[in-house]
Length: 621
Image 1 (cartoon, one colour):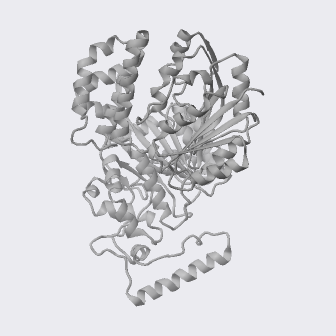
Image 2 (image 1 turned 45 degrees about the horizontal axis):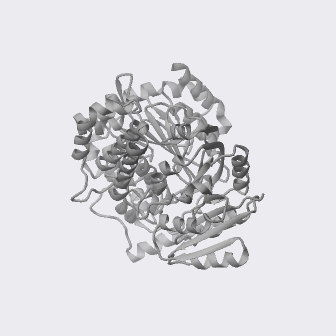
Image 3 (image 1 turned 30 degrees about the vertical axis):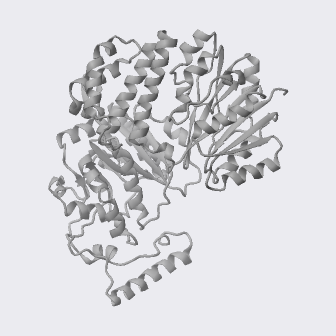
């Protein structure tokens, strides 16, 4: 353990995460480290934290400098360590690493006498973590390294999941004042590399935070990605012309991503900015070269042809999958789950279809949930699982989670959005369900109770309910207190004449579960602030807010009327025999023969009927 590893940590306003980052470095099992903390003009307590750790660990050096950006901070660290250390690593100040990361990477770089060792990494998003494992490989010889690692997903652009021979950075520095700095130096780094080893295990934790500027999509960031690709292409033309087709293929792909950001409204284009028509002309000009480029995938060539011909058709094609010559419309399933995950497992299996994407919210109260296992259940769909909101029965958090899932899914513009609970099941095959919605395209499927207006509905909205979490609490005293307090509170508010009722609205009620179009989803999301204001401190208004919005809008004319009770929303829900009734094995035939497309609810005590329905539908495929 004689070789010195210099670890460069650029720091800027990271006071909430910095201690975890530094602790993970100083506790490494490989101890011969030089830890360079570069405080890039932080305006919070980050600089003080750096100085504090310098007093604790003699291996730590601290550089305080004026703010110059990530590249400037990394370069300042390189200027200090390239004259001393044997190897170089980078760790960002809001990330952290496993305790044996440098030991594993060091042993591997020595074993293969390598220049770079790459490892897998974790992506930490709020309450969920993804793992990015790489394919194991060793590449020897500069030409082979460039061929296998340049623009390759198995060789990430990021510098933080690697250990470098310090000689690589004798002349290489990060471009200052630019975004995508890791990407911009990739060719410079690989040109100075003869041996690369890739190990699949993940040791680095890359944090993606919802409020992070780095994760915010803007015109400037999207356009900078194009400029970065063009910069790399110019380098390749001069220094490695045999990689030109690969560089061009990446440029075309990022132009398409840029176009998507524009046409789907993810970014605001400034007055003098690049427009969708400009990008269309770019593809028209280069379409022959694109078709001849062997590095461009066939499906991308098809997309580029469509762009060059008709942008309206291209936009539609992005939300409709073209498979075997047939256009198939896409649906999004929004699932709220908190228990009985064996039923959720069957639900996911039955929804797994190339025409569906699945969005699941797991209640934050759930202590154990195997994210990776449930993601592994899908083979054809795209699945996203969130754990964000503490959902309380009767409270507005139920509305919050619906809007959260709807907002997240609507970015991809589906034809229909289906809200289900984690203890629901489809009763028909996906072919049947998609054919049904194709025949009824544009119709909205929402349940409305028969009564147009009554005091029971308005009582949910009229008064302020400050305590709702206790209605289903396991604590009997808290549950009793909640009921008594809200009863007294309603009486007082009634005497004082307090009312949150909007007299311009007719309030309607029904089941919260729905199947709605993208147009209605967008209409609802556009009223998020009104929803939060009107239903804050309300009671059980997850069964009121959507029905009321739709009833008081032109969309009510598009609600599909179905005679069967509780089936306007295509759900078989039995309220006559339970609250609601839990289906048993003896109900199997009635469920399958029902006109409904979905049913609720089920539980693990009656898992037999769940398995029978699952097997019945799978046998139909």
